[in-house]
Length: 492
Image (tube, rainbow, N blue to C red):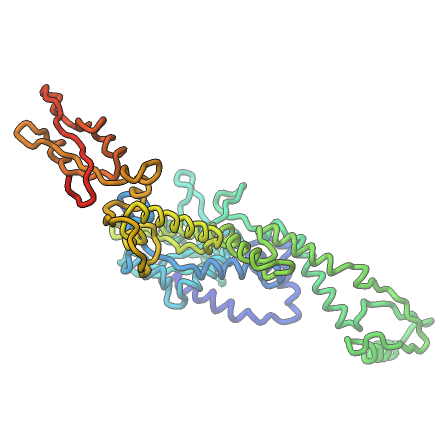
């Protein structure tokens, strides 16, 4: 199956290459992708027909493809910051090099073009005979893949149709589909292009009319009236003389001299057609369909540096991240399970493309500096303070404000001890148990436990004595444990 499919894909690429130069006579028919045609191929070809659409799809697909990815082993805590990076794995190798002809960047860009134009992206998985894990992935044109519905399993498989008409059946584990859900068809995606076909039509026709304006005498056509019928030689001669003297931009606005004829103007000026306003309105409609701002496609008119930075962050957050999340879901829920037990507990994740906010960074830095100053006043060592609050290590030359105490708690614990407490309450407390044959196991285990402040110590020892987890009461024994405040030297 893999060899058959790979051959069909190669044939499709060869056919596409051979058909790239379109003869002028058939170009109008081949480019007639709006209005009359609404299929996936017409939606994809629209990218090369309208400049605004090309700019949008090119920008979104490039931004998505340039983001780096990493493979992680999930932590038991479930928190992303506790994950461990996996640098060697077959799934990671496949994602970095989906097939022998394209790196990940090209693969992602191609499938993202398909998705942005048709609302669908298809990855076909290739395996060698006798090998269960995926060895190659190919981005396949959406118009060549057809889902096969099932009455009891929703989907029974897919069919790939090659350019020569060969139909190749594909199993569920050979295809991964990314789609923008379609309200009326649960098997296919919904394309933004469908919502703007009349606008794209208008833009293309306006461009063609402008082109014809300059080719055909730099004005639309008119009528030459003659008083009597012309013979074929006379008609041909009149036409050739007119084209020779007035056809083309270089002959625009020349005075026409007609023998036995009268020129009747039938033109509609560019001003009357208002093409500038028309094409501008079309650009707005295309941007609205994709939710793209002017700055995203390079229009920086009336924008300052602050607005440009904000626009950059907005594009990454509102346009790039949703596309990455869709790819991430496909990788983690469809591709990784194909690797069996070797992929258990693993997940792909992308590097955040959203640039940091300068104002937020400045506020965070100020808050950390103020927290460091408060900890220093409480007598903590400068080196430990900087590390705890996430500031870089810098030389310290000033005299200590108070006898230093090396921090033994985390930053959160240190700050918690300072907020709402006096300096004395910020010192450490220690649990003390009477160890003998009557000491219960919980009290024995908690003997010597350190607490960041009085509030934390009294939570386990209400009023300063009696461990809350003591089991001696079950045998009629009163808990003899207590908490005491430690001096700065560490002794009681």
